[in-house]
Amino acid sequence: MNNSSHTPSAGTVQSCEDTKAMTRRLVRHCAAYKGANTKRSIVQLIITIVPFFALIAVMLLAVEHDFWAGLVLVLPAGAFLVRIFIIQHDCGHGSYLSTRKANNRLGRLLSLLTVTPYSFWQKAHHMHHATSGNLDKRGFGDIDTLTVVEYTALSRAGRLSYRLRRNPLVLFLFGMPYLFIIGHRIPLGMPFSFAKVWRSVLSTDLSLVLIYGAVIALFGIKAFLLVILPSIAVAAWIGGWMFYIQHQFEETHWATHKEWNLHAAAILGSSHYVLPSALQWLTGNIGLHHIHHLCGTIPFYRLKDCLDASPELQAMNRLTLRESLKCMRLTLWDEHAQKLIGFSDIKVA
Image (cartoon, rainbow, N blue to C red):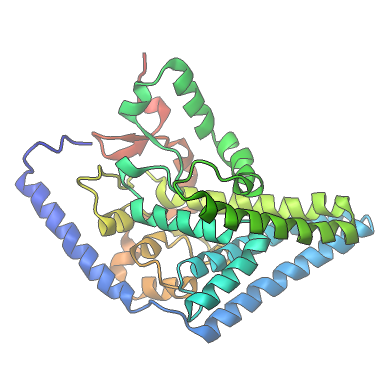
């Protein structure tokens, strides 16, 4: 980060003013797409829930009759579970249904499928939106990211530990399923009162024991291990990657608290993930993340409408599927270059 005690140049001041004008303009544009359309919400829920349960039912029957080829359906089931999570996510923002009570009730029901405690996740996610891109308030719903200065100041053991945590195999293959299957059962280290966190967590955990206990009783432990858990793991891999790429791209935006601005961080620090239409549909348009962070109360089915009506938003922070794969190497925030870089880009004694 550039030293904030330096006097800003005329170009920097102009750039700041341009950014402020841009964000005001885009906030006004996005505001027109806020709010739920109940009919569209219900339709989207039906065309997401019904295929998911159909896929799970086919796989459970396949396992019962030792027809292993049916387990290939784990992949689409996991993808539909991601879409269910997006609906739960919108409920948490109060944008999916017309009332707060209806959003919360639906969100809590869906959380039994996504195995994510609704109220706990909602609080943590709101903190993520309120602090995203703030270097002094990292740690709320984001990927653990150090600055170059912080990393080079670590001991050898500390640097090795960070490298291990940021290794793609550890982060995605093991870390994401662990977060959803185990981490959400024991959410430690969050700045919420014990009662608020554990009421949500324990009520969800008890419900999961009853629901999946019934699945095991009806279909056997093999069905649970070969159908339910793999579907959750696939959803965790897809969803974890989507969340990663939404903020972990080279030209993302970070700033110290003194310099941080909510709208600038939202629009400049969130990617526009350009996916094939089928993948964009399955992931609930959440790849249009620059719009979502700028206006979190736009339901997912209106994000594309908002994008299509703004050439400015269409051109911003574009990241293709191929380009996104290169972002796995980006692990450190370079304060001077103002971008994410990889371990190989620095020299540490």
